[in-house]
Length: 119
Image (cartoon, rainbow, N blue to C red):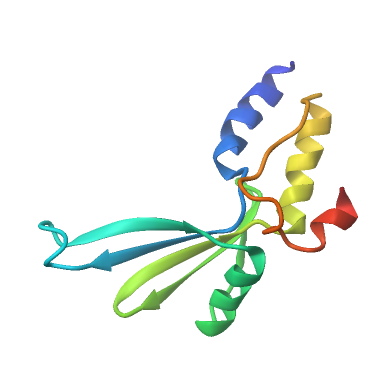
């Protein structure tokens, strides 16, 4: 495997999953040290609903090859990473370039509908 493929596979590995929502929760009774950060897997349609609900601007992260947004909710910032057709295409291209057997996502059926047209 070419060296640049090895580096890209290592860098891309954490992003091989469906859309994600990172958020913070503060519950003084539950957590002694106040706020905690959490992550929740979302279907693509759920992720898009969050974007619309908070009128968030989606930005493409070129280095990570994924779209994301963040917004304020109750004084705390929340982040949503959108694994859509464009990000899946980049991963699929990397699989072909590096002659990998494939890549995996957490839950089938949570992807953007356009993904299947590309694969």
